[in-house]
Image (cartoon, rainbow, N blue to C red; front, side, top):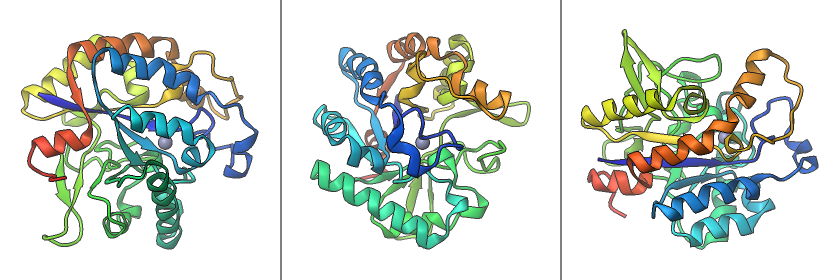
Length: 279
Ligand SMILES: [Zn+2]
């Protein structure tokens, strides 16, 4: 079973809500350092992954995006400003998306077809975003987490890839991050904080269970999660500290085990293999 491997390409300060977009240029760049831990592992196992690029990164460090693209990985879009969708108006979101697509496509001289919202922030309040994503020419989305947290999630949405959106002849494909069904609820499995926090044996068991159900898993990781030395900022809550700093020293080791134990490709490859994308 071919599973999908993805990364959100942002730096350590982009997902800290107390740091505004206007302040980003002041902070230390650690993205290249962390990509230099991830890309050699992908090369070693001859794996290709999908990289959802923040438009700001494409503008600030274009050489990083070019390097990923030239290595044969899929380039997709993670917006420009990394703002929660449900805190934007539809017009603001469309502008942010167009700006990100523009800067990324100009840089790689290639078309992008996939989108992921910052903080998985498509939910009932921001469901309108799906129409805009399709109207702007993208073919798949990967933003709807079928769990519920204080920040994101739609627990009743499908756990596996599905067609969604406006008209039957112009659907968008949704590829949600993986979960397993346990005691009547969905438990997140294999992405971000959950990958770091859970013992690898639990992740392995969960992903095997998803594959045994006949479905591909979708993994999403972030370069700052590979960085135990990232700057320690004072967090407003203990939960925030755990979310950003817990178990960072285990990610690279677990990631090596993951790519040894499962077969991975890009989201585009997985959806094409299912006959859902022809491109
Ligand atoms: Zn992000």
